[in-house]
Image 1 (cartoon, rainbow, N blue to C red):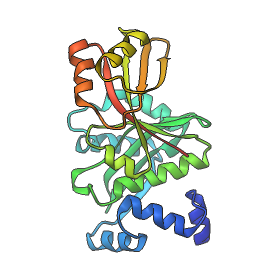
Image 2 (cartoon, one colour):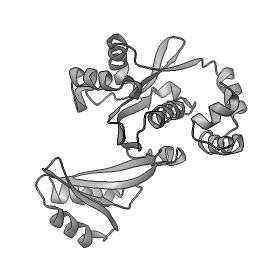
Image 3 (tube, one colour):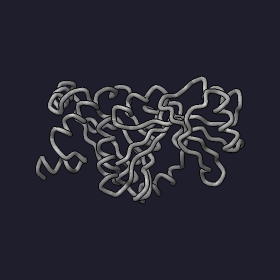
Length: 240
């Protein structure tokens, strides 16, 4: 593969376009990034999950990224095995000197969006470009497979990280108890944020999407504590 083909594989028309996008995400040139990684003694290898043993290794590593969240928070081990069998390229891990240091667990249907359910790196590998590199790989694969984009819910305080990767945020409010009209009325009473979308998810979860890229903590408190029976999260997405 030529260097030019590598650029086009990642969706860039010119090397200059790739350089500009790389620097906006990593804060340095590709050469500087490589030199800094080598200086820090990081020898990272990123690959997709090839067998169930590798998937189980990610689950064993899980507490390093999500110490307060159980592995079965979104699907059992069997569910993730089925997702892996459906499209293994959406489950990635990063290894440094043979040890897992980060991962992305995604799933989806070609022609639609990839949902990244979980992603992250261990504390020792933050701000070293590993997390960003995982997203570069999953985006490349998803584009090749015909997915339209990537969507994921994020943890408060990480909005800037995903914004640098080109992800656009919206605030999702959903409830099984309250109707869409009631959720909209609550929004109008509080700040009357611009509504981007309303829908009923899986026939029972009422959702309103607000054009609010950062978590409004007072808004979250109103829905989750004062009103109750509501769930609020910033969701980020990127078209491919």
